[in-house]
Each structure stands twice: as structure tokens, then as C-alpha cells.
Image 1 (cartoon, rainbow, N blue to C red):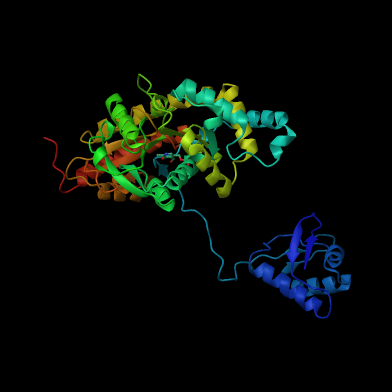
Image 2 (cartoon, rainbow, N blue to C red; image 1 turned 180 degrees about the horizontal axis):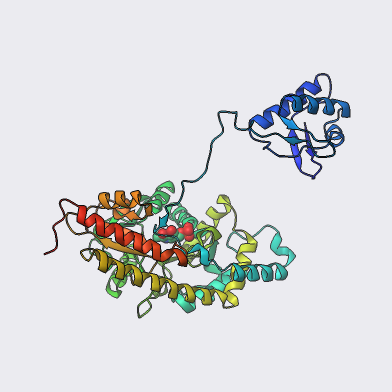
Length: 476
Ligand SMILES: Cc1ncc(COP(=O)(O)O)c(C=O)c1O
């Protein structure tokens, strides 16, 4: 067995033992590595001298094996150049699975994704460089499951200033996006003996699945135009409720002050927790800005935020501001899950926030998204005025409620035929919401130069489908 270096100093793993029959074994090992695709077409192999040295055989043994495999078409040998793997032999193993993702729709109006073309590469590069330059050696050692203190300090200031979150550096936990944060909170609740968690209906199916995976039963609670309904909470036995008060996902309603008070007084009466998913908190277009629920009751509300919409989902950074009673348990869960988030990313985000660049980026994106929101609203009003546009005071998507006779199914099929990506509200229903059928249309994802074409495609699809629909009553 040997790890051989190629002439380019790359390692090649080959299972060969020195001794009798080692030439045949080397040939076999190389053939198998090539056929399985482990050694790809064009890969340079170690020189005969290096490989012979690494596996402890005579150089002539390697030369003969290479010559055999060259004759059989597995390798290409040219005078004075590396011996390389030939093409056309890979993937012969039937186990090979092609994991290429499904192609994105041509007009991508799927909700939940920001404009990736506006990711602030230059600012991130600057922040990363600063972070690297300033990082102490200790930062590269085993890290703190709670996250780097530099980032937690920056977040306390940022969240207090922009979202009205009341917390301390010692109560913030940096995680890999809100998705992981929710799992950590669900684990902490389960460890306290919790068994049932309220989820909004409609809401993201993934979050119910996460609660379930942690051993909590998700219980759907209907949402209306003021957010989560609170009138029946005392009748349902719940240990916690997951809400999106700033911009209900996906309906887009904002939780009013009366509902907020009712929800918090329920939590106090029952010793329960509210988990606040503030994923759209930064993108509010009307006045006045709505602060985080957590600021009203930091001992009963877990605040959850993410860089997934302000920067990009791929950054995989999120944060929790936890009540003291859940902190230790959430940290324990983090320590056994994956220990902590990448330290350089954390330090770069701290730099971005501290320098003011994060605020500037968010403000610029808010202007951009507000303009897009206006274009979508105007286009629907022109092309399909019977559809009611909802939930556009914040966030990166609009809900288009359908009139009787026009169905999600026919609009989704029409959209698919035209390669327009969007969602039907049906995908988010959890069983108790009884509102009308609707489309959930994201306006974050396309690049600025693509956006107008996306809106035109959507408008044309809506206009034509509503006219084609046999049951839909014509406008008077
Ligand atoms: C409702 C909601 N909350 C939170 C998130 C953010 O998740 P994450 O931070 O794990 O990317 C998303 C992203 O799609 C979302 O739709």
C-alpha cells in the first residue's frame, strides 16, 4: 500500500504490496482506479522512479506495468512527458452516480434566495483579508462552540441597533444558518422534556421536518393577515412556537402589536418559548420598521437570524440570541453536532459588520429589492388584475392570491412549460390554513439584468393562462 506523489507532487493511492506478483497487482490496482473514475482522464501518474520508490518495488516493475496499460489503452505515454490516464474508460463501474443538480429554470422566481450576482465580493474579500491579517494564532486552534467573540460582539451591537434585540455576547450562539440554529433549539427543548412545537400554517416544510427529527411533534397553527393566530393557543398543549413575526413566511403578513402581546403572555403563562425566525427582518420597505419580538421578552424568545438573505445562503452563517435557560443545552448539542462554524468566515463577517460595509450593502440591496417589488406589483396589476398581491411590505417574495376558478396547478404547469420557476402556496400548507390558492413568487434571485425579462415572462404567463382557463369567469 502506498501514497505515491505524481511528478506534480500529487498523491495517488494504490493498494499494492511488494513481493511476488506485484506487477500484476499494480496493473490491477491502476485499472480498477481508472475504471471506477477515481483516477480521471488526464490525471498525470507518478514517474516510474517515484512510484517504484513509494511502493517499494523495482523501477522496471512499474515501467512494465505502465507499458502494459498503455498498450491496453488505459494510459497515454509520450516521450518526455508525464504518463497520463486515457479518456473514455471511466464510469465503467455501474455504481457510479451522477449527482448533477437539476438545471435552474430560465426565469428563476423561486422564493427564498437573494440576488447572488450582488454578493459583495469585493467587500467580503477586503473583510476576509483584514480578518486573516488580524487573526491571532489562537484563532486557528480548536474553537468555541458558541462562536468567535469578535463576531458575537459585533452581532450584539448590530442586532440591538437595527432589530431591537436585547442580548449579550455571552448569550449569542453563532451557527451554520438558521436551519442549524433551529435544530439546536429543538434539541435544547427536547432535553428539557418538551414534546410539541407550534408551527405556522403555511410555513416552510423543512422546519417542521427539523423539529420532528429532534423528537418534537410539529402542531400547525393557522396564520391570517396579522400573522399567527393566538386566540386558541391556551387550548393547545405546546412547549414552544416557531414564528416569523417580521414577515410571515410565506404569506408575508406582519404580526401586529396585539398579537405579539398575546403570544408573549401565552409563553409567560405556560413557561413556553417562542422561536423567532427573523429571516426577512432587514428587508422592510414601508414605515415604520418593525422590531424583533425578542426585544420585548428576552427570557422567553429565542431570536434567530441569518446571513442567508443579506449576503448569500452559501455563507452558512446564522445566529441565535438565547434565553439563559436554553443556552447550555444548545451549546451541548452544537458540540456534538459539528463543534463550531469556520473561524475565518466568522472573523470576516465580524469585520464586515464593524466596518459598516454590511450596513451599506443591506441598504443598497433594500433599495434594489424595493424596486423589484414595485415592478412585480405593477406587472400583475396590468396583466392579471384579478389576482391579489399580498405580503409585499417586506422580504424577497410576493404572494399572488388566485380568484375562484383559477388554480395553482394550471398556473404551475403553465410556468413549468415556460421555464418560469415559482412555488404554489400548497407546498407550504400544513393542514389547517383555509385561505385561497396562491402563487409564491420570489423577486430576489435573478440578477438585475435578468429581472425585467423574468417579470415579462411572469406577466405573459399569468395573462394567457387566465384567458385560457375554461372555468375562470371573464371580467365584466
Ligand atoms: C423562512 C426561512 N427562514 C430562514 C431561512 C434561512 O435559512 P438558512 O439560514 O439556514 O439558510 C430561510 C431560507 O430560505 C427561510 O426561507
